[in-house]
Length: 438
Ligand code: DLL
Image 1: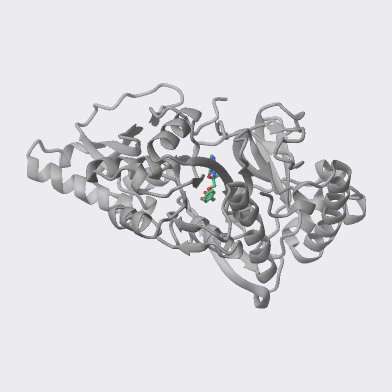
Image 2: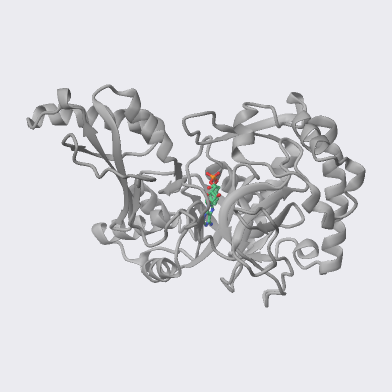
């Protein structure tokens, strides 16, 4: 089934024309409304008239997460405040979070893209669908929610946590589809084993998974354990949220909603565009966004583009799965964590040395994070009570900043490896590293 036959199966030439028309309008729109882009373009010696087709996109400036932070909160917003109807925010590092405002039309486009994804995952108005992404500033929960309603399926907004209740609802409401991080689905499978619930007691057909990288091995295991088919959904809050691209029944690359989000692959160091098929950093331009459009936003996600019609009938360009990230952001259970956030917490407490090691692992299919940190001599104690107090203090402060629970391991003074050159602060033992090996 295809949600929007006209767009999803459009000829390549027609799509190029549509993208060109939209890019020309977008560039004029941001030049007139966002001083940041006007200045960037002026500095590069270009003006809106120089952009005549989608092929001119490489003349335009890039946008980075840092640009969004530097212009916190609304510096890159193009629509007037009166027209903004929703605001999401992505996790901040030590600095400002990134704020994204949406107009009514932006929300409609978002629901349209998520509808394409859900339809590709064989969901329709006959289905009951639970959304296990967090509802809140994170775009996962509400992003999926309105897509499910838009296709006429019944949405069950379970959100995160409360897995036993979710399982009971899955069984009793005959839920046929769910959206979750892959690691949550594995956790769900484990909980079923613990409670003695068999997959045959559930009616699950499809799962729409994203927000973190996952392997084919993980897909096979989840599909087998839950008796469903797993479909990738990709997206990022700065561009819109989930629904930038999605998998079809062929599970061979994710179809990009390229009438709204124009993809390019660049070399992360030289910033030069790379040919289709080559691996590099994904860059998106939001062709139709009103609230906070972005020109050539550097996602830091490493993947490649795949051309050629898919046997599902869709003609849109596809992207491979994400191989890693070109920066050092860790994604732990779908939540973005920056080592710098952890460092700043450690540095804010007088009891600790700025010597630490972050160990990320996957235990029983769930991401874990351990922060090993050296205690200053004057605070060091081998007494259990004293150690526990230190542990608790750091753990609770960390949780309030990174929004997930970290296991704190108190280390004796001088016990963490010292490095002469660049220090190693993160050990990621998971099967997929979220870091681009440069
Ligand atoms: O994670 C939006 C989302 C929610 C996507 C629910 C899919 C499902 P952010 O919190 O801004 O937004 O994080 C965006 O997460 O740049 C990727 O590194 C990673 N990511 C998102 N989807 C996938 C995926 C949401 N399907 C960052 N595969 C992105 C691999 C993904 N990584």
